[in-house]
Image (tube, rainbow, N blue to C red; front, side, top):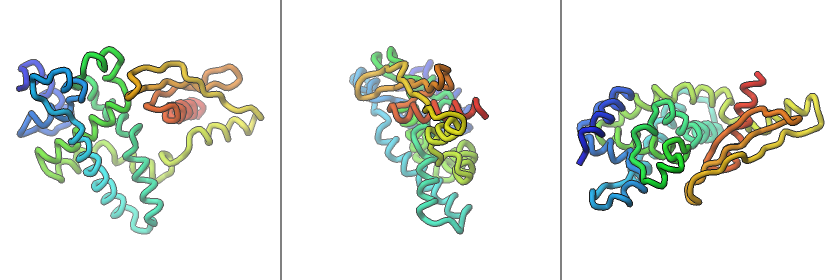
Length: 234
C-alpha cells in the first residue's frame, strides 16, 4: 500500500519524467531497494531486482535498434562497443542523478545511513528498474521515448568515440607530452557495506589535484576521476 506522503513524491517524479503510470505500485516497486523490502517484510513489498533485469533488456533493444538504423555501415563489433558504453553503469547512474532518482528511493536504514541515495550502483540499478516499469505499465514506444530523450546525446557521443575512450590512458598521454611522470590515483573515501561499496578516487600530478571521481569499483572511480581531470584541462 502506498502512503499519501509517498504518493505525492511519485506524482512529482511522474511529472519530472513525463510518464504517468496506470499502476503506481509498479513505479513504487522500481524504486524499492532490497534492503527496504527485507526490513519491512510485514508490508509484503517486492524489490526492484526483477524490474532491473527487464529494464536492462529493454535498454539493450532500444539502443541497439537505434544504432542499427542510425549507423548502417558500422560492423557488429563497433556497434557492440558503442552500446556497451551507452548502457554502462556510470552512464545510467548519471541519468538517474539528472532525474534526482535518489530522492524517491525506498532504502533500508543501513543503506540510508551510508549514503545509498547517492551510490552509483544503486542509482544505475534503479534507472534500469524504472525503464522496466515504464515498459510494463505503458508499452515499448513509451519506454523508447523516455530512453531516447535522455540518452540520444550519449549515443552520439559514443559514435564520436567519447565514451569508448579510456580516460586514464588519454590523461596519461597528455601528461607524458610534457613530463616523464605519471598521474597518481589514490582512494580518498570508501563507504558502504562490502556487497555495495562506493569509492572516491583523486587523481594527482606533481602534488596537485587534477580531479575526483566516484564509482562502485576502484577502476570505475579512477576512470571518472581521469574524465573530470580531462574536462578541467580542456
